[in-house]
Image (cartoon, rainbow, N blue to C red; front, side):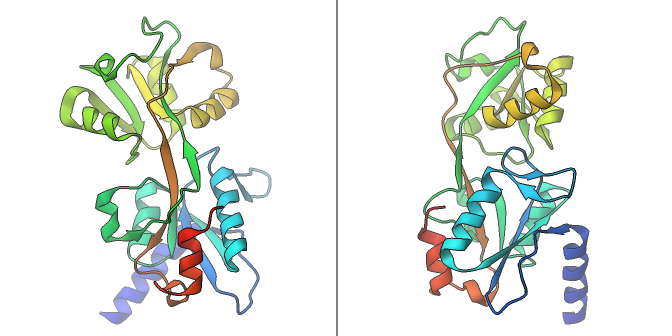
Length: 244
């Protein structure tokens, strides 16, 4: 059983892409699984290096705490989350806080970044502002897979008041909106604007005001992380309490 477990762990590690590996020193390295999610996590097409607001925040945080960091890019959010959950890596980004995740993760005091989720519609939609969640009743609402955006919104759509449509990335959501397969996108305006610019379609969609609320994105620390970051250690205390 022990050998099988090791083989499984190795398979999961090599199914992702290891980027930005730190120098080989005695300094502990925090291994972080992630997915490409611009502008939080951006993989440059020229050389594969990672940038983005969440990546920069993790680098700032680990530099303050005196540890190296390796990012392992996974092909899907479920894979990235699972790798951290079972301890193949030490942490995962970007992650929303949820009570159900406390069984597997420790969350720092402060998020890496705060996203502001909004409702997005096509320009020809009769809806021109966000008045209340009732505008979603009976409608098809697209969100990124496993995304938790805002407590009242999450409860409303997941209680069946609207038809929830999950997609793996923001580009797919935009495609569904423009083709009429969904009525609304609920997502960070920063992420949508990034893809609007890339796709040259800003004139075809509208971001409704006011936004849905705030959505903190965390570095979730696996409860099965390596002993260098064990609870009570200086590194753990720093990662838990320091601000990026």
